[in-house]
Length: 199
Ligand SMILES: C[S@@+](CC[C@H](N)C(=O)[O-])C[C@H]1O[C@@H](n2cnc3c(N)ncnc32)[C@H](O)[C@@H]1O
Image (tube, rainbow, N blue to C red; front, top):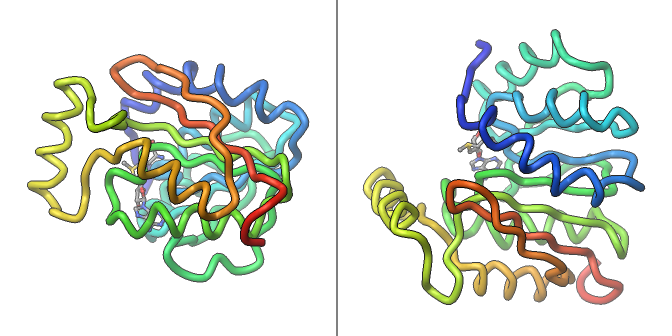
């Protein structure tokens, strides 16, 4: 039920440093692909002015999120099932965070993520991605190895290129605002809903 991903404890403080200033004026955060739920309770505890909405497309993850939530701060909302490639329902938020999903899902999940978020977010709202990325085709050797292992598990998975991500983001009404280098050859890609593009 309650699952544990050790990597979340290694990366969470670094991700928090990126999130805190960008979520300072926000009220409700939609977390896509919350996984175990460990990040959800940590970020909600560290940013108590927020309502944190954890979601995942996978039923076992929702159970784990709920188990963590039971011991967590009160500003974590009940976990919701949300597959980015399906109907997002009546979810509300003024920021979106998605950690370690787009390399471990088919490419279609990336345009679906930005399309769903573009319907949800008002101009100026942030969308923050975290994970391993290529930049102009180039990435660290550890990410090249990781990419091979992902593709061996599912040929539709793989480390994505920031250029491709930003292209689909722009097509769906987002502008790239920041690229923040993180430990272990990961990055945060920070996007902002523009005043133009699909609504
Ligand atoms: C590697 S885990 C990352 C979980 C968590 N964010 C973390 O960093 O520990 C990837 C997560 O993406 C979710 N996922 C994959 N495809 C998805 C989709 N189409 N919509 C929503 N979640 C998805 C999986 O269920 C899984 O929980």
